[in-house]
Amino acid sequence: MFDQVYNSPGSYSGWPVIIATYFFAIQICCDFSGYSDIAIGTAKVMGYDLMENFRRPYFSKTIPEFWKRWHISLSTWFRDYLYLSLGGNRVGSVRYKINIALVFIISGLWHGANWTFVFWGALHGFYQIITMWVNKYSDKLYKLIKMGKKHPIRRTIGMLITFHLVCFSWVFFRAQRNYQRISRSNFEYSRRREDINDKNITCRPNV
Image 1 (cartoon, rainbow, N blue to C red):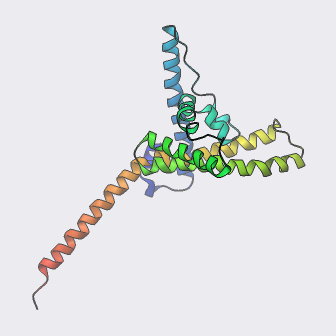
Image 2: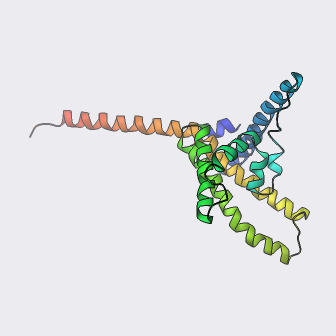
Image 3: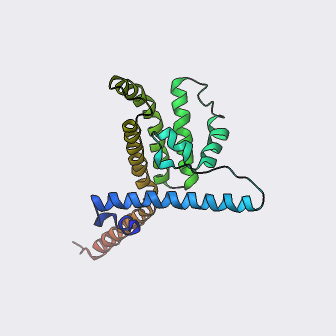
């Protein structure tokens, strides 16, 4: 279903796009988590223990928690070999936020040399940075209404917000094929315009 919607973005809007995005979010999680479980199980048969790679990521209450549960092996690699090499959080506040943004932008490039992947990574970097600011005020608000971090309503609200933020970012991740199609269409449209202009010049009568 979501392939049909995303392959013809101009033909759909509203609920079909939202539902297709939900389905894609489920599919990509099941695919990645399933492949990882197969690898973990196969390694176990041969006597090797591999790390857990997905830990129910859509039950995360914040974006930082999501990345502690999603593709753990990849996010751990980026943390150990890129984020910490840039200084991690042992630097000033501005540099710390720049480090986070750089790591996620590069992680976007790792998924593919396409601007949609770059934007996807940059969006998650923005999520991480804005979460730091939001947490300061949300903690005070929840404290006023006497909702602790383990309160079921607070946990549910956090999970719903995080899930929908992640789903919004999946739109750009999945749209990479449409980006290529749009670019190709623009190129063909430009060529047709040039051909038409050339014909007009050729057919223009001499005065």
